[in-house]
Image 1: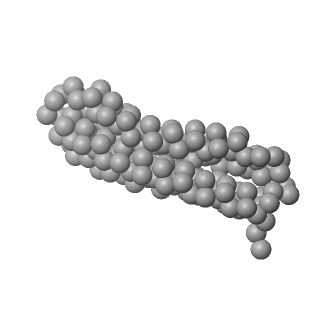
Image 2: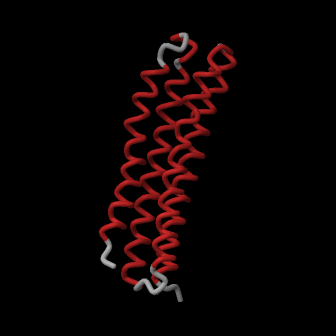
Length: 154
């Protein structure tokens, strides 16, 4: 049977899993568009590389939440099961935020990448700006998790 600390660690693992999954999907979508864009205009490689890498950040956000939950669980080895369940649920929420944020960011970046040859790269900044809106959800998922963990009663 899992104790509260084990549940908290599982929550952190789910946060990382969401980041890894979403980043993989998002980078795959953007990279797929990038292959076609580079074939059409090899000069766009730098812009493709930049846009295709953006969905990777959600993996780091998930990893940060995992570290926070591991730290919390190690500092509270006798963590009660209800608190552990709360941290598990929090980790799942972060995992979903990171997964969806990275996936949809990859779709936005992929659309921008598809237009690079036609616009001679002038779409890069606009595509990045639009991708940042979706990035914000991943950042908020991480920040809200850290804030919620600080509010847990000792």
